[in-house]
Every structure is written in structure tokens, then in C-alpha cells.
Image: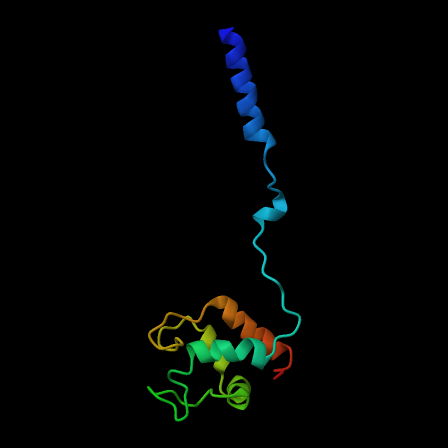
Length: 122
């Protein structure tokens, strides 16, 4: 009787441990949706507003060399003022924002994708 209860208990535990999972390999991969088109209004403006406007206002403050208040300002900074190098830099002297922390890499990559996609506004 005692052996039968132990065996049933072991069988039950085995079933619980190995038979009741819905996890697949796909569940182990963290995936973010890949954006087909990155636009200033939808994707880039919120990044700039949340991370850059404190200094890159109009007029710029805290030693910022230019405003980043609108599409034209940001586009010009990407094309002519080396903005991507500044936000990508690991050099503490060039770090944006000054004193860090560095802009998260996923946001830098989104800005790069925006440039590569033609700096679309809408």
C-alpha cells in the first residue's frame, strides 16, 4: 500500500513537472516589432522632446549649439551638424546629454533608421 502511494506520487510529480508546460522556443526570443517606416512625427519627435529639449530649446541653453525644436532643426542637425556621431559617441567629453547617461542604443538605432529611410516627416 505504501509503495503504491509513493509510486502514484512520483508519477503525479513527473506529469506535473514535464507535462504541463506551454513554453516553446519562440517564447524564449525577445522580439520587438520592426518598424517599416520611421517618421519624425511618430518616432523621432518624442525621442528629441524627452531627451534633448531641456538644452536644445529655442534659444538653446546650457551651452547647446542649436535648437532641436522641430523637424527642420533636427533634420539639419542630422545632415550638417554631426548629430548622429554625438548621440552615438562613447567619449565622455562628447556624451549626449552632457554628463550622461548616454541615449539608449535602441533610440540611437531608431534615429539612424530614420536617416537611412530618408528623414521622412509624416
